[in-house]
Image 1 (cartoon, rainbow, N blue to C red):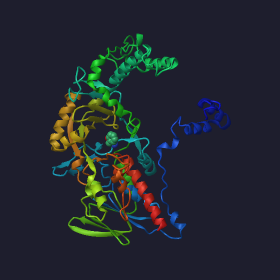
Image 2 (cartoon, rainbow, N blue to C red; image 1 turned 45 degrees about the horizontal axis):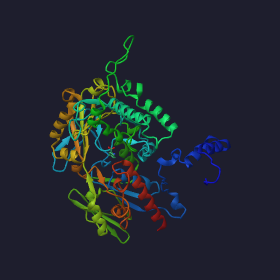
Image 3 (cartoon, rainbow, N blue to C red; image 1 turned 30 degrees about the vertical axis):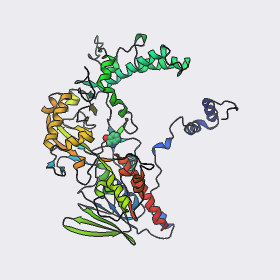
Image 4 (tube, rainbow, N blue to C red; image 1 turned 135 degrees about the vertical axis):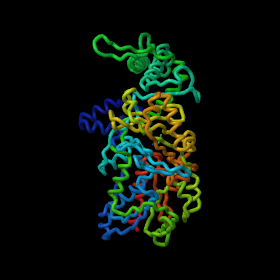
Length: 538
Ligand code: PHE
């Protein structure tokens, strides 16, 4: 569109295309104009390697690949390479597949580094996901659930009836601290007051340079709805913040409370929780596998035909003239295996301690990555008091206490028992819980949660199991933190994307989606593609 040519509005352009090509053409053009998100936006292109790729070259694929780690990245690497006839073998330090993807059930045991042994004594059928627990719709994770036949259900990451609870701490003050407030209530109040202020500012002419007269009218109209504004565009509360007397039969009309003063609302800092709920990866709908997150690695492990050696720790990684040589410890024995290539998914903190022949700058890179601390506790209850007493069916309660959040199970509704995640926290709070014994963590979690839920939180409690990822052997972190993944600061990241000889690296730490299984799936696919291209060319 040139400045001198006829002005074609977007709308007229779309109408013109619609006349010629029908609805599909309109949608395609809207994507081209970026009026709607492109339909393919959620998918990274990936072409799984195929056996026929070799048939075209008149040879069979006998390439042997040794994979270090049976977490999501390692399992996916084997699963995808086997589609093209690669002979894969996986070495795994744990006695189970999944890595950080870990569902805790009755009988699950774990001894943290320098910690006592814990055994979960949850009732049959009760569990919680100690690692990943929520999957956004756009993540590749769901494509693997489809391909592997892992059934999924909705994970309630947001619930209008969940609680916000801020203590008078860390800057939060005033009459709204020290009491629990429903998400819907705080959200209605913030929206109401923000809408009121903005509507007033516009009506008083404060935004005349930003808004045309038409814009101003339309904006105020929008704000009146958004904020449920009353007469003179004042926010006076309403049903979206919840009832004190519920509406019911006959003459029971229901009653609402007046909202708190704006000043008290602002002082409470409850609105600080809102942005998270709209994040790219955190907005509803979200999903979880039916029966536990570990259904995913179990399905992958079942689909893989190559051997998975459990309970073996890698002790050395070396390139040889024609391949790789990996030494590993199995009990007191040290053994060596060789292969044509290696894909290493061992977390960088651990890998940097394993003797290897990587370039020295790469060794420095691996040792420089910053582990992030995170932890969870599962609390089994004999009664679902959050459902029965508070009418909360799934979702999350946010607090500014060291527990961070309380998660209500998104399955087993109306049942008898349930496992609540009593804390899920990061960094300093997670370090504080990591330093406690499991009993002390449990006591602290119950004490904090009791402030939100009252005596039931302790009275109905049965047993707990906690995980502090910094202290969990073979992981040593929830994930890693990158300052930067591009430019001069991101050099370490960029270097680790390259293989060291015949050793490739994969894992969520090598993606822009750290702390999600999606990152692990995507890096596995990327390495599979690179390795396959090299083999085809070789
Ligand atoms: N994926 C994890 C979670 O959803 C960790 C994470 C938290 C990642 C917050 C990004 C943002 O809890």
